[in-house]
Structure formats: structure tokens, C-alpha cells
Figure 1 (cartoon, rainbow, N blue to C red):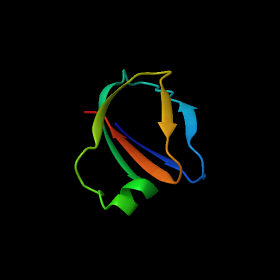
Figure 2: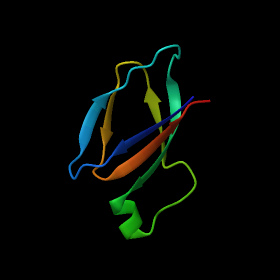
Figure 3: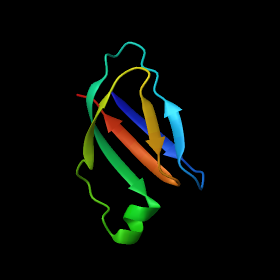
Length: 71
């Protein structure tokens, strides 16, 4: 399963993850945000791994796109 979450705002945003028909588990996290672009650290590999389940809180940096990929 793949989930793309976009925060167009100028401040960080929290949202609650709701999964239907999926158990969650470890997900690869890929993120593009203003901070990474300015630092020149935009890369194709996963930035980190996050353990996610239904009801988890996702914190999204301002002006960012975050991709979560579950196997």
C-alpha cells in the first residue's frame, strides 16, 4: 500500500492515520520539503522507516510531500 500526504501550509500539521483493510506495520518514508531542497539532500532512497498503525499521528512539515510505502 502507498500513501501520499501533502501539506501545502506554512506550518507543520498533524493528522490521524486511518487504515481500512490494512494492518499497518513498518513503512518506508520518502519526503520532499523546503528544508531538504534548500540543503540539497533530495534523494530517491527512503529517508527513514516508520512503524505505523491505524490511529497513528502523522506530523507533516510545512510545504511538504510525504510518501509512505508498506510492503
